[in-house]
Every structure is written in C-alpha cells, then in structure tokens.
Length: 241
Ligand SMILES: Nc1ncnc2c1ncn2[C@@H]1O[C@H](COP(=O)(O)OP(=O)(O)O)[C@@H](O)[C@H]1O
Ligand SMILES: [Mg+2]
Image 1 (cartoon, rainbow, N blue to C red):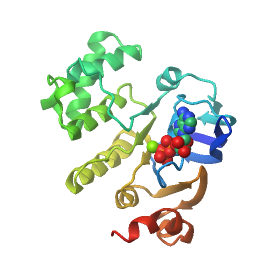
Image 2: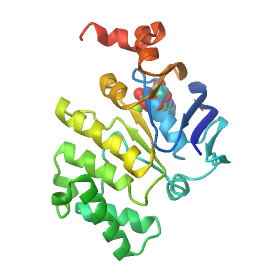
Image 3: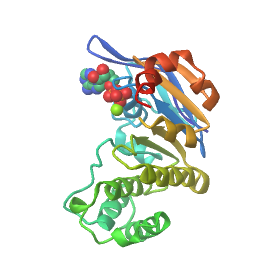
Image 4: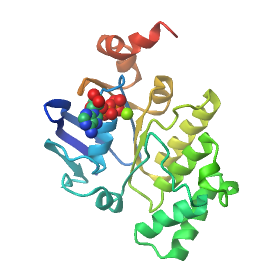
C-alpha cells in the first residue's frame, strides 16, 4: 500500500521541472518534501493528485497505475490535497465548505453535513462552523482547508506549505494536528514546508528536491548532515539563523 511517483518527470515545453523522481508515501507515515523555491515541490503534488500529467514515468496508488486519472477521480480514490493558497468557497460558511466537498464525493447532503460536523469537532474548531469562509483569519482558513481535505476519509493527504505565514505557536499546533492525522486516521501525509524545523520535528523521512531532482533523502540525521542539502537549501538560511 502506497502512493508513489515512479521515475516520474514533468516538462513544461523545453523546461524540465522534474527529472524522473521516485517518491513514496505509505499509510500512517508523514513524509517531508523540502527544497528551495522552484525546486519542483508543488509540481510533485500536482502530479500525485492528477492536476498535472507526468511527461514520463508513472503515479501509482496501492500498486495501480493512476497516471491518467483526473484530479477528481484521484480525490474519490482517496488522494486529497491542500493548496498553497486556501482556496475555500468564499461565498459559503465553513460547514457548507466541507459539506459541498462531501456531496462532490458522492455523499448525500445529510451524511455530508454529519461528517463535516464530526470532522470540525475532531479538529477542535466546531466554533467556526457557521462563520463565512470569506471572513476567516488566515490560520483558521488554513485549518478549514485541511478539514475539508479530510472529508471522505482520504488515505493520503498532501499539504502544500500549510504553515506559511503562521507563528511558531500556530506552526507547532499544526505539527501536532498532522501527527494526529497520520496516527489516528491512518492517512499517509506528504508535508511540503519551508520551515525545516517543523518538517524535521514531524517527519521520520524527508526528501530534498533541488532543480527538479532528489538531492537527498533520509531521516533527520541524514538531512542535517548532508553537504548537498546545506549547499542547496540550508546554506541560504543558515546565515540568518
Ligand atoms: N505550469 C507551468 N508552466 C511552466 N513552468 C512551470 C509551471 N509550473 C511550474 N513551473 C516551473 O517549474 C519549476 C518548479 O515549480 P514548483 O513545482 O512550483 O516549485 P516549488 O513548489 O518547489 O517552489 C519552477 O521553475 C516553475 O517556474
Ligand atoms: Mg510550491
């Protein structure tokens, strides 16, 4: 059981955004994906979720080739994501944001509302239920986007920079939530983050991209000890730290 890129590459015209990447996420596991701006992280998520067709190689879901499935079909098959910008349905309240997604996944309205209520309670944000999505503070908007992605009990959840713009405390709360999603709901998570400390605190396995290639993969010690990572990524931040 796994969601995986298998030697998957992406070209935009003559530009190779991804070079034959291997990346695997297993149920209950949180894998980190880091790398400098433009490394290809969002492109990986787009390919894994059917928003971008791989130019070569394949996407597999529990052993099945899903490279040609639409984003909607992959969502129904259990692969959910969040976006770098929240992308909530601005005209709806929070409960309806979740319920509409449930209906889109094939639930009846009442069942979708019930699952939405349960999810908001599980996340401890039931108080947001009747709030218009448009007026939410940034951090709440992020949390609602994650709740919405959890509708339909996805087997895999891909989070594209969910902690961007959060304070240390908010990021720590988010880290705890991601651990709970993996441990209590059994979902395999892929966490893209600029905050390397957050990634290393949550992920047993981290993959580092640079220029569309995997330049390092492994646990905390392997990442922190990597000269390639330091040069490509941590180096640029080390001065400021
Ligand atoms: N639709 C697209 N058309 C052309 N180039 C793109 C497109 N999407 C991404 N790119 C380019 O591919 C590279 C990787 O982008 P992206 O995956 O968004 O990086 P990251 O998320 O790591 O910052 C960047 O150079 C970006 O400009
Ligand atoms: Mg990105």
